[in-house]
Image (cartoon, rainbow, N blue to C red):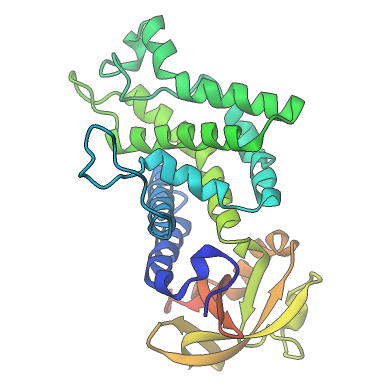
Length: 317
């Protein structure tokens, strides 16, 4: 049985698991390693692409191109990603455009350059002004559209479209790397890392909005459950619901340790939903320790699947 959101369809379960695996890889990227933000961005971009393709598979096929009437129509990558944002509820669209990371991206300078634009094969330091103007078009159009939305409350779909186009420029740049005909461009690499630090929280916000705020959900299966020894560690108010997780629950040094596995057992758990949860994640992470990792996983409630944070056992560290 599916829920009210398109990604809850049972037919998309395998694709959703791929998405969550990619997000968990991004979240686990070592933050002290040089270039970690680019690794995390790459995983998030793959997750977004998977979500966009899953959604596209649920939509009617577009009409064939007039010049090729016998070839099935296909949507562009930009269109598929745009549809992902337009499928969100209006409140979530507004929340995304209001997100501090989106505002920071709109005001980020110098503007992001499209490395696939004409003339961009040369080193950054050697670019002419006309080349820079052409290569920065997508980011500039997003900036201008976002400022109109902020100042005059212009239509959200237009600004969301400009946002995803500018974000996809960053994806393409990361795929291209820092290579030029005359060798690696260190300035380009440093620029990519700076842009990655700005765009990563946008990717996190997009995924969180599409999946209906898993950042506000936490599944507990052990001593953090209500009426258990460590219940006071969850120091925020919220709504509690009985759910089930799928995997294996083992004893590790006298404490329960959960490992997600679609072929595992159904494990009773409790879910708290609270907009205040993000304020206590750092403390809960410290409380759980290095042997547990907070990941996104699936839960089930009355036959409907949702996405939540849950601590999984990752072994002795």
